[in-house]
Amino acid sequence: MKKRKKKRARGYIDGSETFDEFLDKEGLLSETEDAAVKEIIADQIRAAMDKQGLSKTEMAARMKTSRRQLDRLLDPDNPSVTLSTLRRAANAVGRNLRVELE
Image 1 (cartoon, rainbow, N blue to C red):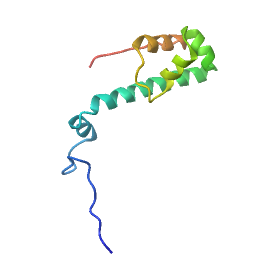
Image 2: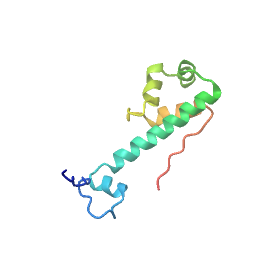
Image 3: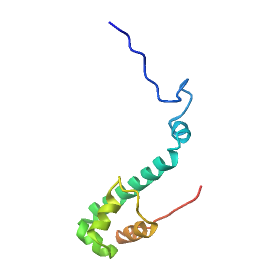
Image 4: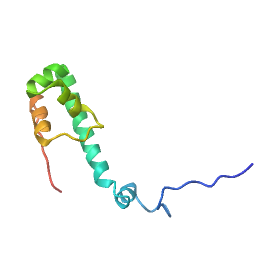
């Protein structure tokens, strides 16, 4: 029976590199962080909608937008959402959008 060597992520040498460091080195850190933030905000909006018993149609009407635009906002795989859309969604469920630089 052959022993298989353990595969390691490209550039992974001694285990001292963090996952963020690996993503940064591969040029993927910003993109990954953006997607995570977008997904978190979409989940928070969806949770607020559920708490208030809002359907997507009602939410879109509150935002003065289309249901299709709301679907793009709630889709974690769709990165193209503007701050304006996020702000309208937050306001529609009685929340505020806060953006910070660290």
